[in-house]
Image 1: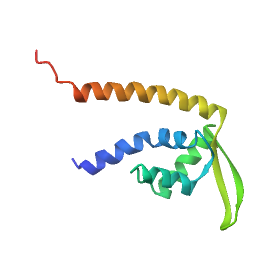
Image 2 (image 1 turned 180 degrees about the horizontal axis):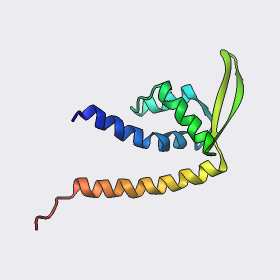
Image 3 (image 1 turned 135 degrees about the horizontal axis):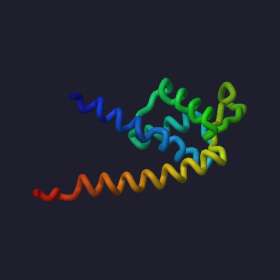
Length: 113
């Protein structure tokens, strides 16, 4: 078993939550989303993020708008819908529960029967 495969699967499992969290405060275009993920050491390529953004949009969690750019072609800005905000709130609660459970299991010495 290769550790890199396991690490990649763990990152993929939280990517949706991270993207929705990035868009919680303000709309962003793909390069900004990727930069935020990169700064957090979650390296994601465009080939991964575009299908995910499309899936989130099709699920009604995101919307987008085009905005003119002074340094190139128009940019597609993504933002949370009201449904997306509710979904993110539920994910945040689930994440907190999961994080606490994992921390409990991984930091507590197991009792031997």
